[in-house]
Image (spheres, rainbow, N blue to C red):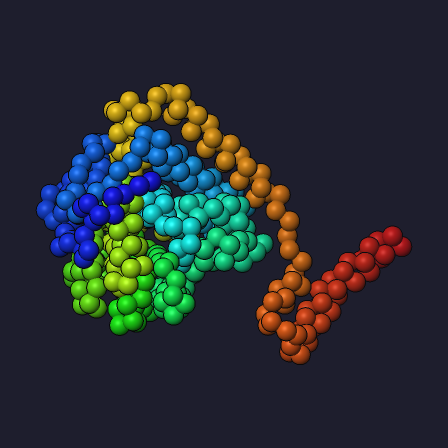
Length: 387
């Protein structure tokens, strides 16, 4: 994807707006309407080719299909838990594709679309939720950190990493993902302070999906979330989080702003969590069906599909081929999860310390003796039955 980094890209963030453009004032950055009409923004221009748009569409469809398969696998007892990204594909794919290969991302536990853009195999994500690993990818290889379950703490990790980049003299940037609920955590405010004071090359990407589990945004803040950045001395921008092109353009500008020594940026991607917070949640207990239906009209995949079809850049053969590829991915994921080998239980004691440790060795021996007692009891029981 290409965006004109000089024409239309501000050196400082323009006065960002307050809400979804298709709902009337307040406004937000949008390049593709819910009906699939391409529009221009005076501050964020984006040039794309039909081939690039088809590639983005493919990413969106495959990520959604993988996510749906993961939800099904959890319902079948194959995963312990799953946090769906349904409805947030544009925010994640758009921002994920805005990064350079050397830019580093710090995710929460829901950034499956960003992981896809950074080249992480979906099976490695699912291994953690199945409980057979702690995240089966190499963060340094992918420049994509392991998932973070502790709410908001990754913003501090990202800020520290970005400060290190500055010390090293590199021109890379860092992006930290978090949700509207995490914005209430003290760690996030601390990260904002450090990033601002030290001009750290970090972009804070908040996916405001309207619900912090069961708490709506209005129970979390009295001002739009992006406006919090001004109190810490750096720019904030609100973007249509269901518009993949706007997310791409704004994030690319923000990363360039950060990497050129101008300090951090806060992006609020105004989107909606179409599914449950996790598979242990029941959203029908705290939100109404009409709200969900209204956001379905803003679906990120359908608006890009409508644009491609309207422009004559995608025919039925292309759409069917993407759908078929998504089903192939789902089958690979399904088969891969069900055949994942369980780790040796004693491996939990490995890599606790860089070198050997007497206490860990003692605990390992105690566990092995405890585990072997079950095998001994089973053998005695079998011998008794033979007698």
